[in-house]
Structure formats: structure tokens, C-alpha cells
Image 1 (spheres, rainbow, N blue to C red):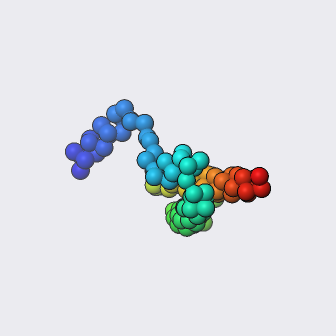
Image 2: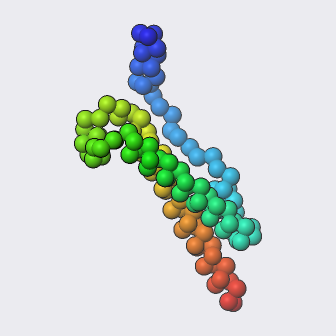
Length: 118
């Protein structure tokens, strides 16, 4: 047990690498001016639906971890703060992904309509 704790401690104090996103949908949106907007909009909307499902999952996990405590109280006194904070990061990521997908789909839809009216 002491060896595992020492390895974990060494890992926790080491310099972290910056994170990066590898996502095919980002590449497709980057090339939006050259692709079928309808297909891209459909993929963005599908991703938003998937993100909504993950948001519900994370929200449920957070509620279970908190129990009957308010979040502020849990954050100050809760026992399993690491998993809770990690779950909050997952929730924030999915909310951001969902919001970006919906906004991007709306923009592409508006552009498609504007171009059709020309």
C-alpha cells in the first residue's frame, strides 16, 4: 500500500501535460464552408443529444455523492472530494460541448437560410 501511495504522490507532484482535444466533429466544423450544411447540422444536433444524456448521468452521480447535503456543504466537508470534483469537470465539459454544438448548428442553419434567400 505504501508503494502505491508513493507512486501516486510522485505522479500528483509531477509537471502535468496540457490537455488537448482530438475530435473529428471539430475538423468537420472547421471545414464547414466546404461541406453539406444539412449533414453537419444533423451531426451537431446528434452530439448535443448525446451530451444531454451524459449531463443527466453526471448530475445524478453528483446528487448521489452529495446525498442530502447542499453542494457548498459537501465541497467543504465531504469525504470523497476528488471523485466529486472530477465528476463536476465531466459535467462542465458536456455542458460546454452541448452548448457549442447547438450554437454551431443554429449558426449553420441561419447561414444556409440566408444563402438560400439570395
